Image 1 (tube, rainbow, N blue to C red):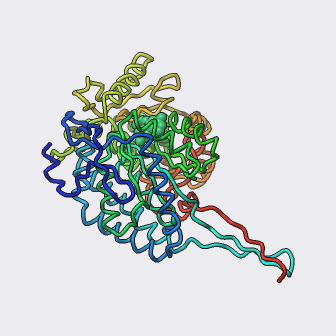
Image 2 (image 1 turned 180 degrees about the vertical axis):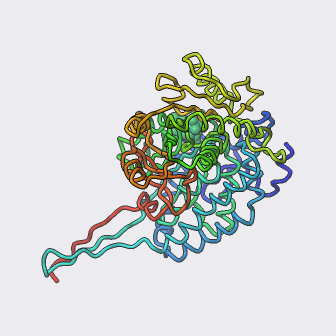
Image 3 (image 1 turned 135 degrees about the vertical axis):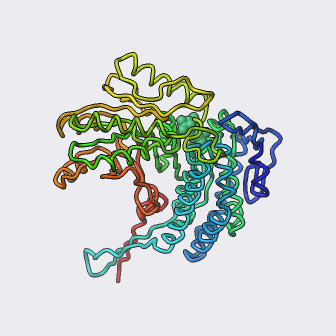
Length: 484
Ligand code: ADP
């Protein structure tokens, strides 16, 4: 594959366990989603090797946990700098194995690095508390201590950012880590791990268990069931999240789950329509619609509905679809054939039930699908009920605010929501009424390392990024000192 020649020494195809690259005899293929071309063959670990790695991470824990905050901060800071120095190479890897346009991949590298920078700083601010005592002979303190060995299972849609926002806070807190990256995108994960080693990460602190889809299930089970693993962080589908939670129940692991979304994007009659259309394009089509905070349901008030749909359709038609390495391409392929089939299934279902097609809707070319806009969508249609995870804009019409809230909240998911209005009272009413973890008000772009990312309802629990992100990786310990 032509991209591989541009990667050089950052191309790693072995798992990383205990500071050693584990060149395994059994391997699995990683392919370019755009054309199926082979990129590399990567070590395919099994559950037995996961067990070994868990022991190694447990042995590495005492030293890392007892390192000073400054020491951990300095290594994270160096890792951050190395990620930025290798921005171009990492972006090439992301485009090659995930498909997003190179410009977008460059943006992801910067976004991924920002979590490492943020938690390099937060490492120094893991403060405890002193609580006013109930009696004079005693004093009460609270320590915040590293939770222990942590496991992270990450998805393919952001091969770099989904990784750093789990790994960086865990390392900052003093935890050791077992990462199982998505089978579609292990190369970015391994390159990032290599940079972490270059930054001075001690052996065994950050381990990467690569595996194909089948072995991932077995490794996932071991990570869930092993008593030495104290925390599991997962980003992926709600269905797999439920399974992992059930598997973690016998050992009562702490968990952070970032699961599917079904974000409503509401446009009121009083909105700035130019801004709403810009925001809609970003929130819908970024990463070809394959993000968990992508707008999945456009809910538009009757007075601006037709204008909004017309302008969204016009702009959607201008999006250039192609291979992520081609100059000027704005949308790459979907990740695999299953994703294309789901997109087509949602589209066909909606059209059969009466949705009107404005643009797109043509037969896919391989894994490339055209940005598509539908109106007259209703809640009987799959597009309104499930996350499409593709460039399909489904528009519903509403008449009053109460109806908009009811439509927006009629979902088992509660990750992101967006709305556009210029009425300040309505801003507060809506912001408080929406059942979700994140709200974009007059914007479609909400993700920053300094802000808490996460959901409610069946989108999961726990927060990534922000000062709250450390909380996932520490235990509180209350000290009661008496006899003073
Ligand atoms: P997606 O639909 O985004 O591919 P998945 O939830 O299937 O989401 O996958 C996200 C991550 O979970 C990947 O790293 C994948 O290998 C892993 N995974 C999938 N199924 C399981 C499972 N049964 N046990 C553990 N990990 C799994």
